Image (tube, rainbow, N blue to C red):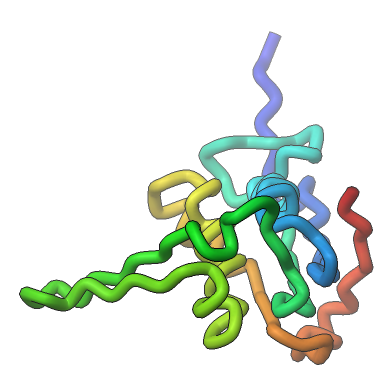
Length: 143
């Protein structure tokens, strides 16, 4: 008996639209990461790029539970001595709300070249306007 190996024509890649307003950061990030990986598809192959594209809008409306808004720290190091910059969640959500979701999702993807390609299929926008109308994204409700 031969092993079935799916090819690219077997993956019907879709574009999903996710509204992040009122959602919790971690729960949203895990669902988006599983869409990017393609875990819900029957033809999942971990060595191929078979996931879908995801467009996240209203990134400013995301929240975290408990005291994480003040205690959650994001770090950025320039590589130079004294070049470590730290931000808490409140500061980063005001400056760059897209960065919060990008960092959360990227840390849930595989740490290899395939994970980098998956992250390129994620588009995050702070407001409700997006530039992916040509891909006809279908809205998906994350519970």
